[in-house]
Image: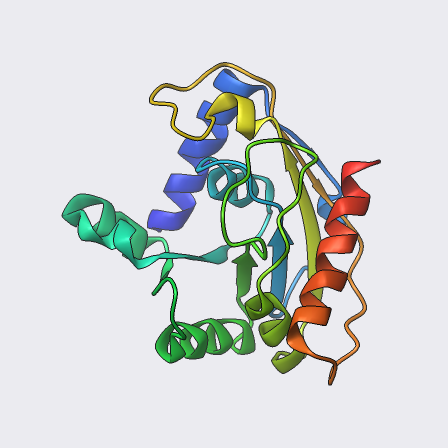
Length: 196
């Protein structure tokens, strides 16, 4: 209930403030678990991706965001999974696997950190490769643009800049390869969406 209301509100605000556009929503599976992988430009990215995706998804976010009581209540209500930075977090991994295995969507940002320029990419972390390898569910790439201008790193105020979210076809995962190699293959598909 909280997720649906939050998405509805985010959609209205995104249309008004950012004239948000979606492409490729037909690539999102209609049912069953799936992993949604996206580039990372801004704190607005989860809102943009979650608004664009026609199905509910759980995001993984740094646990320090849960230090603020009101924000933590909302994050928990919409299914955000807290992740410890700089160290393995078995609890977060187990929750993510359980969610996707039970037929839910899981959204990841393989780069881990935000970057400042739209077409500059950070080497991906192996975590996305690990989850893609372990979960036998579709992996769908997404490319977000405009959020780095709407809310740049360090900015305190939103800017009314156009935001676009583009989804791509399911990524074929070669399971059994090193996790970082799988993550790099995933990022290559995300980069391809940037050029379309």
